[in-house]
Image 1: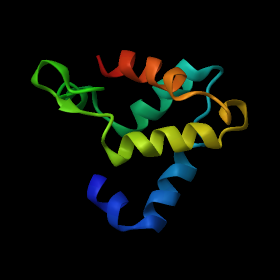
Image 2: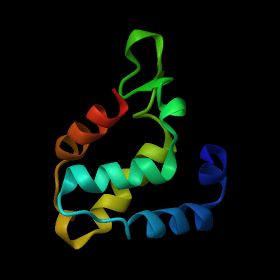
Image 3: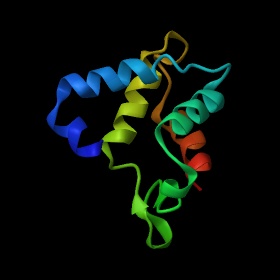
Length: 94
């Protein structure tokens, strides 16, 4: 999926559109819905947001950028700061 998003912009736009439909009552719920749609818990055990404890870095993935883009497409979250999106992401990945 990661490689396909780098090479196929149409696919990336489709993923962003689909994920932007998963809006929850608040930002934390929205992040939870998106992460559940994209990843298994097993896969996420190999990642941390910034790569601590010998894990892979999640924040540099195209998937992470797509999550940010998807959330910002939602009217409720268009002007939200990166740090506000990072907080629930870090919690979910930890």
